Image (cartoon, rainbow, N blue to C red; front, side):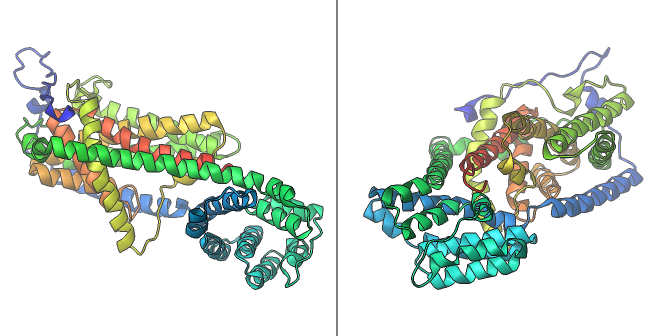
Length: 495
């Protein structure tokens, strides 16, 4: 297995005449000036404050966070109704899914309260009405329809036209063009059309045909959840196998890392903080400048602008820093990008071992913060994308660009500066904490800190950023794959 591979000797730059040690060690100052450290701390704290405010403004609303599981659940309920109508639903499934319509109705009711736009609030209440109707709660369904008309006065007549479907003696509704447009815009549209067919006595075939679009979406939801479960269980099983077969090697990773020769960088903690801060600040500035030069704004253009700004900023800031040290601007081996035999397989094995702990930390963080979800701002973008090329570009950003940039800044520059002045474990934990806090998510601090600390240990153990970058890319890849599976499952009515 990968944990049994010997540590590879990374290349030392001995090109200078008479050099017997890496040039990094030759130029290490005795002590970094105090004012540099102060400037670095001030800049980095300012960056954190700005990042938290910016992420908070971009964090998906609670309405969006609840609407996604509500839509997925609505599709599953529709699939169950379709199977019931066809007589193909096992009795055990009927028992286990019996309470789902009421739970989804309550969730949609909560979503309608969280939305701010009248049309969104009204449509969410209409979804709640349709699902209460599935549970044979006609009074609750009528109440939600009346509430929808009040929340969205512009469409009040369309909501009120559906009231006959849920009277004590149901009657067919009149489906005007406005009603049809409304049903096309909601995930429970197939349920309401099936109700109409049933009340109008159109027969089982008409009911099944009305439910088909939502039922197909429900099947996609089940497939997506199944694949996500396979990914989760596969990682857990592989982690257990590694624990059982390589326990001694895993427990010795910190010990082994501590005995690897330290690579002393020619910069201190303050300089590292300044470099990170300048990179992010320049990225934000580039985004503003490029955005003003280009007409129009949309999600796709915003992603391109963000990616280009990040690449330009990293190349400029680190290139100038290398020039200031008398190096070529492309000589990134100084930051730790060196060949190593402890690379791809070692990084992936470490990721598999640590992922169950990261998932547990995520769960505990959610519990301790009251269960409030805080998805990364990029997740709703991935969930809403339909353009294949844009999705591919976003995957490149999350799986390739982000690990390369963040590993260079936080492990190649910051961790190695901390490692020069602190014990290994303290440097790893502190760099991991700073890496986590920069993401601006309360629930993410503990799991991301664990990831960042392990990435730091991988960097020290291998003497290179390759293993940590591979582990980082693997983690982002798993998260992105799960989100894209949900994106596929959400391709249904009212998408």
